[in-house]
Image (cartoon, rainbow, N blue to C red; front, top):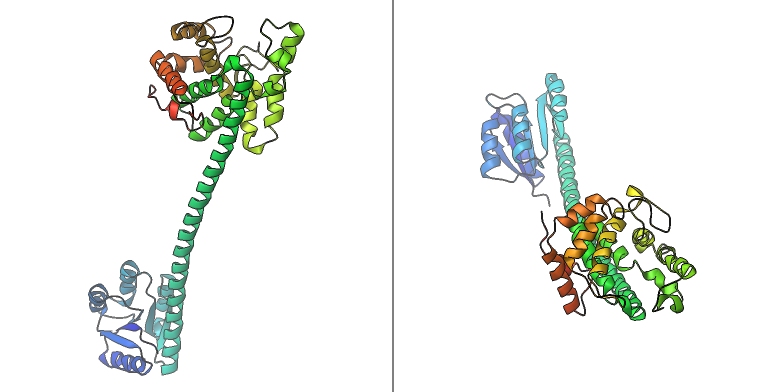
Length: 368
């Protein structure tokens, strides 16, 4: 049974009474107002209404002005204009401004009720659509959060696999044990200081951590040889960049990181290998890594020498700016205190389960 509240606005008492009687017989609940100002008072103090039936030509606040006010206070409430035949043009103008429909005086009961039913059906559909839209947005937001979490979990599982792979390489080449994690921590700290995005930093971190993965394809007789390598052996060893790239580029998740692996031995002036790239031909991640790699190499023990100081590393990196290293990366590195690198190295060495992809070790405060 219909029970919608309908606000009837007309300055003629007889018209209001007739419309109210028609609506009541159809089980609607009419509320009467004699002009636009009284209607606005009703709308503001006694909401909500399911429909407004209003005359156009009224003293004070006319129907057109009431329509504008209604759109402000109850935009979801449909309004039907009631007008005389000679006001049709005005009624059409009202529709263009947001009225749902119009009725011409005099009208039959069935005309009135049919128009009211259509207007109320329109309101119900609009409400249902709004509710559906709201529910859909909530559902999309929830599913998006679930997908984001699933992707994060998947990335974490990938990174755990990569950590195991890096640990396996460290076990094979004891000479550089812990090097991959340290150089990744240094690379992340430098990348952050250069203002790179978290997404770019994650990619660079993976490339840094896996930079030597191609050494798994190098014969142990060469990889683990205690003395100097001859020319042929050095040529084979240099293949590890291309071998690492070939291993990783087939994995979509690591395709961008593979470029860093491929280029990590290139020099800024073009004197590096395997392709002799120079300047910005070298990916930024590889240029950042080159500084971090040299920093760790100089400050770590090797079978043929003891570790040197971070001050010595700073001097050497500064000396090679523009030749081996990108000067802009070197400038950022030089702006960062040696204490940061010392603390970062200590944190990595003290935590056996340090994750190079969690960026925990890179959260030491950096300049800027």
